[in-house]
Amino acid sequence: MHLKQKKLNLNKTDDDIKLLLLYEINNHILLDKQPSTFLNSIVNTKIFKEYPFYMLYKLKETEQSPIHHPEGNAWNHTMLVVDEAAKHKNKSRDERAFMWAALLHDIGKAETTKNKKGKITAYNHESVGADLCVKFLQEFTTDDKFIQKVKGLVRWHMQILHVVKDMPFADIKSMKEETDIKEVALLGFCDRMGRTNVDILKEKNNIKIFLDKCLFDI
Image (cartoon, rainbow, N blue to C red; front, top):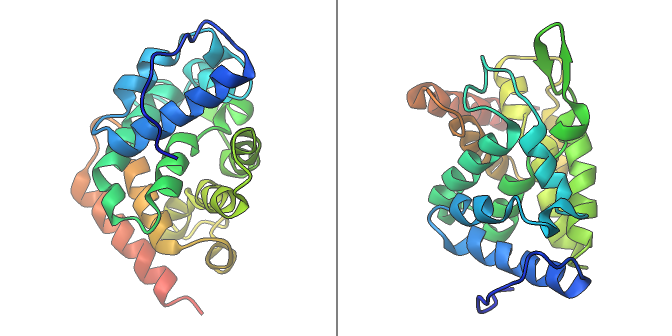
């Protein structure tokens, strides 16, 4: 899926440009040390406000809890996660699926985020996001195995929090049936690191606890 980079007119919105932009995004998230540089350069273009890219564009308008996400909106968070994922993608068994999951992991937040009296939540954004990422990727590929890998990672990326804290949303059995827990752990670590003022040692320990609990779950 690697294509030679070429100058695109992102003020056009025809199908050919959309497809070429997908390939360009694919190249950058797989090859760049900081994919956010390219992604931030295109986020305000005309085509990025069209389907399906607008699913990502809307993250710029999606607020997050300043307690858990001092970095700001969901787009800012996603950019930090993608850059973190780029540092660790060589540890993944499928770099392409892993990097696309990093980019799309919070795509469901735009539809699920609520602000009730100052309390910002995005309950079930991982399930909503799993369905949206399928719609996004099906615009460009018929590789269902690839799509299902990305979907599985997006669907279960919150399990680190749920499992570590023994929350009722934890579902190790279903997660194991649908995805690779080591890939979830890697994405989850990048997700947790994609914030400002993060405690690296604490997050590494949480990943260890998560893997231990998943390993010994019967």
